[in-house]
Length: 608
Image (cartoon, helix red, strand yellow):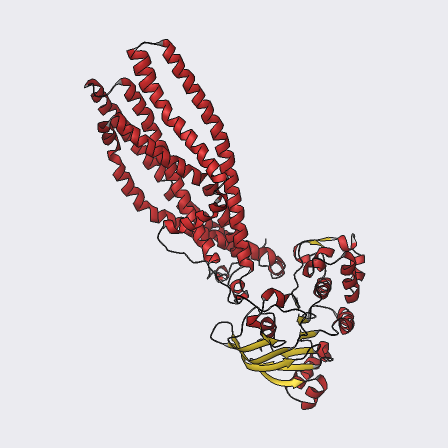
């Protein structure tokens, strides 16, 4: 019998979601007004068309009870006993119902279209904004939590915009009309029936804050669940390699249970409102029958007015009940909109000037002038370094992990701005130039390259969408990727799944090289780009790079020092400082840190 593996409780605490904290803000209509601004583009077509249909259906519903009670019962039957008049009233009511039916069809059609368009605009706005945020934003958040904001939180607003906004207007209009008519028919009976409203308002106000916080909490738990799902799927190979399936399932079960419990609490609290309205309705109906009968006996109210009053009273509680449900929608929308606007209010830490310099056809002359940088304002990743990379040079950055190599690459691409000093290309401070024009002339190849879903052709063309098929194939041939591509079932038209899982690590890296080179950059950054490639493939790439990097400034970050022997200049970094610089032979002659790194690496190779 297989022994059950005991789950370490520490494993259940291995995830932290520091960015997903409960936002405790009072419900305010200003924020809802900000949300409703997404209706503005449709204020001249879909919105007024929907409002007109609401006005028609509301007017019809307000007219019919008067026709039934006052005109049909009192006038046509009781007073005049006029069958012809009664038939005319029936015909008018039938026509009104037909008008209401047609208006309702268009109201539903136009309000649904309005809601879908608003959600489309909102999701597009959030996604566009997130794409422009700095790397620090993504460093602090999991992909799953970002996905929840863009998908789940915007989806939760769908009911509000599809039906909620129009229904709020319709119900408020209905309530106003019903109250006016009720007071017109019988002020005494109206006051008697509505005496319960202040109590209902007091109770609902007390519930409001608790319900809103419950929906906020539920959204946070949902975000945590999605984050774990995303992480688990991407890390399934590691999970299976370390036989951590049971621990992973245990953690998922805990997160899933938290999400379920939070949803249960939120729905239970929200469910209080509807029974409260129904209880109020029951009390109001009892008062109507008791006091209405008394008024009829006292000749203060006719039977037809009583019947009309009963119709209107039913119509009064119906929008009250719906407004309660809509209020729950508003609470959910408030929780979701807070989370959405939290992202929309995020500003990139890399700001672009109002009239930035457009870089065109740069030579690739890079200068670091006393550059300092810190990711967290505590530990400096770079400590006042100065260096120069001449146009067309191949520059290598070496050093231990955390020495500042990748930070230099990040500053050149302007994923971050220096906290001190300046980074310049062709004499321009990067803080003064257009981000698009800068990055358009830089290609970055990472160790963990990303392959998108689509064909091989589309992945290579990603950096240069206007490239022809022949140009794509030429780039693949230049880098030596054409050999394995031609052996695929559909060649360049072969579909690859997300992250290119059907390809080997080396094949994915070759594709990334072809993609970078097709973009025809003036500066190429290779950040550990050959670390995951076998020796044979590495030799193939090195031979291609000798020709392809000609005339371009290239920065190579590598732990495998054999890949940088031919670099024009090598900078050795340690704890954010440049401690040595020169070419391979010069640094070997110095017998310093670079020499020790080479020596240590050859010892490892000899041991193997």
